Image: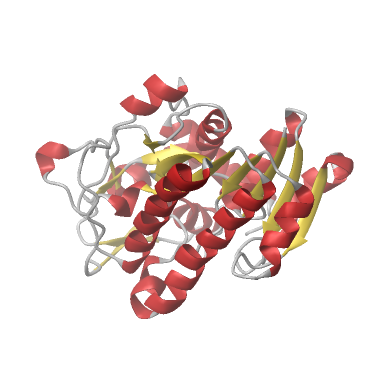
Length: 317
């Protein structure tokens, strides 16, 4: 298979690139390196140079379509995005340019290149808004009611995927991702709480817990998520599928798991709750089990231990 991965130098994207190359596929990476890093692709470039091409390009660029036509991918994995919810609130036009117009460029490239399928990284954490307690873990039949410009842009992208499927026969599989964590996640900026906590723990610094720490998230390990993307290249056509564990983990429980994996007590400093933060979140992955044959297999203790090992080896201390 010839695959193209937008955002392929990022945390999830580079892990996906490693998996695709390990399975013998040829891969083109498109990344503007605004948040991704070539360091994430160092192993892939040294070990699979003949099967990997990296193109530093913004998905909004008019050159994208021509590049995709030249490279002729069979499957496009679209992960590039403006992914900071706070930026989407302060700069909604920029968010829409990247996540809506950029996605349209990717879809035009897929159509013009004759790609069979687009596998899209949707946002399970924002797509469903704030469901009632009795609706958690959330299923895909729940109405799509995003409460941030970022969530709206991701919902719009799904609508365009449906449109291109009907108009141009470009198949898609949209994966509504829970809170993805794992090695290579940047602990700075709009990073996941696992990466932020790991960086603090390795440095011997206290972690910041907003509010009472009883807010919950569905933490799913990056290798498990990448497995869903690979499966989505052949299965789950025309569907939005939740990719999560279905299990709620509180921030306090996460800090405890981090301490257990590090063999040290994690000191927490409490700060005021952040306005607009979801109180509870978890995704029901049952449909992905049916249509992709997928499930998450990495438990939280194993996953956070892998993150801590990565932070240590990266010399963050």
